[in-house]
Length: 421
Ligand SMILES: [Mg+2]
Image (cartoon, rainbow, N blue to C red; front, side, top):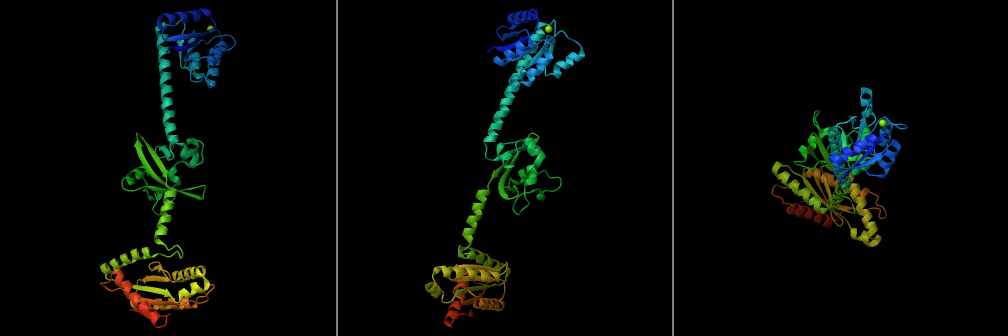
């Protein structure tokens, strides 16, 4: 396809010379558009797709410099290469050629080989620019399509970012981002299990640290947005030349969901204390530890006396309330290393890192607390307790069985009491 060249000169003869040169030496490459004034030239520029402009400087009304300024300020024409073709040779004029946005200049009378070479050079260089720009736009549009936040950084300042990142941080451009936040790393909140700048030594580069860590673990960061919304991201990074490409994948929902599942799997939904599964896991660990370290602990099982009567007389909703209130009361009297769980129905289990004597005292004190508690709708309830201490050859089953025997004895002997086995 032929390239379109616009020649602007107020002297017809000059245009005629240009036409002859192009026709004779490059007629198959270029179409020429001719204008005898800047206005006429501007008119053609707006109508045609022009690839390069040969522009005279000395013209009546609007001279070449003023015309160049107008061409550069118009969105449609601002990138078209301009070569001044001029009789002017003084330094000031040459300087002016570039100042007003010209790409080159050729002196009149011109050497046609030189002129054609310069025309060809500027057209090709313009084409390369266009290709490069298109490639950049292509890459940017791929980046912008990603739901992940993507950042290109030199480790200190942001060089590029995609829409997802700019939207998240509520800024319009990378420059705005740079001005207001400087670096995403400053928005990472210090918290257990999360990556933040606090984990770095003084000279560490945060992106390098992310790259190192992500070889063996997921690097997860917490970011607080608008001072209230907590978001959790998985961070990955790679180096490219002197730059880093960082991606942040939002895993807030997944991570909240997994916390919910974890809670559901470990806690009794009514009383919000540990459920039987969790208790069994914990007690099994405890048995292993006790065997390895030759330590001991006490296991207690307790059961609400005549709980069936509560449900029969007041209904299940009141029964549920009693279970909740009882759980809260017992929980209040346990400490961080004690284990407390709902075993099922109206049965609860406890474990304390104490000897039997102390365990019996704890059970007795709990029995009294429960007896003295004013339960909504039912006034008073009491509990029976079976207490036992871990023995070397105990399994989970043998431990529970022994405590159960003690509980059975407490029931047999009239309830609201603590028995041991
Ligand atoms: Mg002239």
